[in-house]
Image: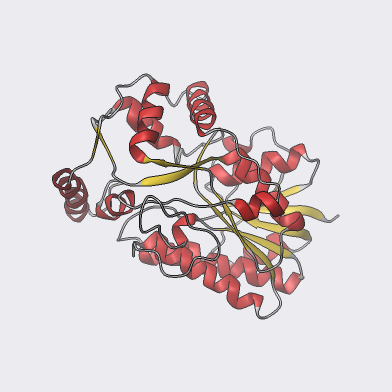
Length: 327
């Protein structure tokens, strides 16, 4: 029996929402997950499990064999400076294995990348689309490896791979089991700050992104990139909205240079002392000063990408976190 879709990263925010969208469409779904992956995110869902890892070439080949399309959501999304080898293994080599397996099977793969792999607006007035050229400003390991993973997909396109790349913005929504972006809501609720980052983001709903990814699989143009972003807002505005939703005191000011230095390099110093890398570090601070503003017009035209209000996404993400006892 042929399976409609293989989803990698199915226990993560994007992958888990993808699985649910596919099942609602009556599609058959296979997932590739590590032996150590929690079963809770997929409890009660009718999916076929293949135990393995995207960094295991043989496991990837087993998972891809007998499916019609691959939705590759697995990634290491940590923002920092110290995870290059790990992120190259997962983000670059893993993508290469998945794309090459899809090529050998003659099936489509949708590479789920990020707007972080794209150029950055030079000012708050500029909005980036798929035709923008140049390199991202940040050289943190996540950005570098997501660019490299895209390059691998484009390289295999020249060899006949049927692939589409999607670049989601900052996603919020339910089914955030790890949690990932939901940590921002939890942090604002537990440790409200009077200041917010100076830059901006493109806030979108993971459910809308997941629906558009399936559309990209069904009718996206081979070799084309689609930005799946949302409302372009400053971090100050976003954090104020989040604070109001979670019942915390909203920030009033943008983060000044001294606070950025203390937070960023203080995090780096703690990482060197502890042997790890904290979530708040100079790479994260650097990226939060940039304006990640994007235009999703192509996806709206070609994929019928529809976006709900970011306030709705904030509310639904928070309600889900409360329901699942993260709060």
